[in-house]
Image 1: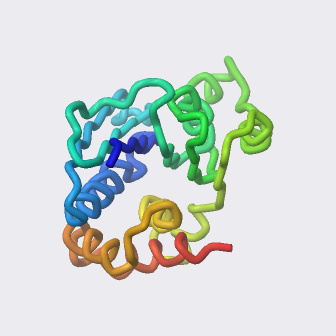
Image 2 (image 1 turned 90 degrees about the vertical axis):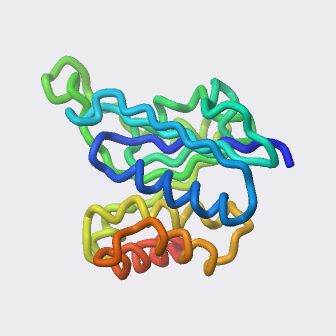
Length: 191
């Protein structure tokens, strides 16, 4: 099996690191060699956070270079657009449509770009965009956006729901399991 690459991108505090751990656990349980690399950036101040998950028969490096990502999973719309150069030609973006203003927008030095989903699709990019924040609220916590995204990502992986549930159970603290499982199901089942 060739090495596959997933980039999980977002803003500090959104739960991207937990999402990468769930995905890594799922893939390890499936018998794959997995490398996870966390690039925090200015995560403590709301800055960009990028996590790489690489998996396959044998993985030698944890870093994903430009043009190598099979999937970009994005917690925030502008982060999906910013990381577009890393996506393979036939790659897939799974993104939350939530917008979090970066510092230049907050200070008035720039404006948030409009119609990002349409702009990416017009470039021929496969984009699966949904309101993950609303689904997370429905599950019981705005912090469950990460599991909504994992549920949506599960459409593109051949792993059964039971394997995903096992990965969530072994990664998420028990007191948050019900909310996270519900969030996963809402993302998976979204039409």
